[in-house]
Length: 159
Length: 261
Image 1: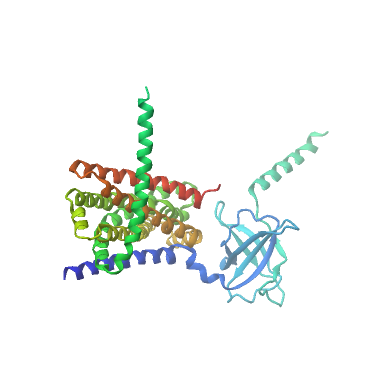
Image 2: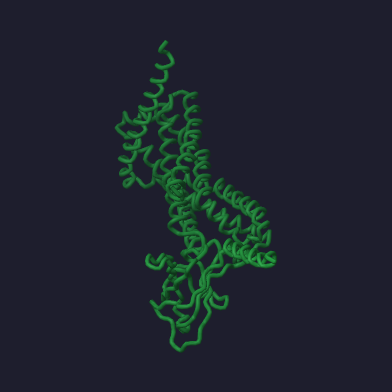
């Protein structure tokens, strides 16, 4: 009887431990999204991807339709080659859709936003997005603002 | 004249022979594990002692650590309007560091010291010697079940600690402080990687710490001087040595897993 009681408690303990592992894997980690990698893949080239990371969301009209599956550098053109995995139910995106890298809030994470185009044929596995807009790099923006200000001042002082 | 040098030499040689004995001890321990296939009941009893009885302290500590992380993370992130990352902060700190390390330290205090005292007293009262007299191998009958039980219990306790900690963080952040619950889980899921974070952090670290904690506890007990003073010294030594080994080992593992060099 005592041994039975013991075995029951140990069984509960082991089950609890395994359940905790399962909770960590399913609820906490990226396994929760693992099915989303299935969809079809399209590529997009960007001059500068800023702080974009693998598994960042891909959205259209604010709705998440997939995620970034890979980021590579094209050794010939020195452009960033971003692979987007888009969920299979969104298979009717026009082939001339454009992609831009946006930021959620001022300091939030970066994501890829798609803008639908007007063509009749659709994006499919392996196609690439022609129209892209790079990430806004804050330092570059500020730098440009300063040079603009300097150029604006220069003619005024000349006479 | 040569007194200090002699003492240094003796100290180093003593340490080295102790390390050698510890390694031989581990080898004999692993060799004796096969015995447990015939007597699984021994394992169940030890799993109860080191696992089930450690549950309360692990559950309560995990909950409070998670709640503190939630509070502190909120207090710091709210200045940047970044409280939606709170889930990531709580989960990553627990999964990568606090879960495995604190569980191992608590385990050393709760179960490791008890193992040392038990084995040390068995030795002091010559129970181990009398077993050998009866041709019963104390490694197979006494040490191996305790070792395997601890080795199984620590990773499970780590997972429980981490999971409860995250739930505690969730309770403070979402229920008490009003962080958006959807963002809490979504950001966490976006940033926590299954193999890199949970595999390296909770799984690999806890297995390494399980080996260290149980090895040290059993070895200290087995090597204890067979006096009441010796057993008390060995028990202290277990907690100190395990804590140092776990913290030092954690630095090495972190540098290997997450370090940039």
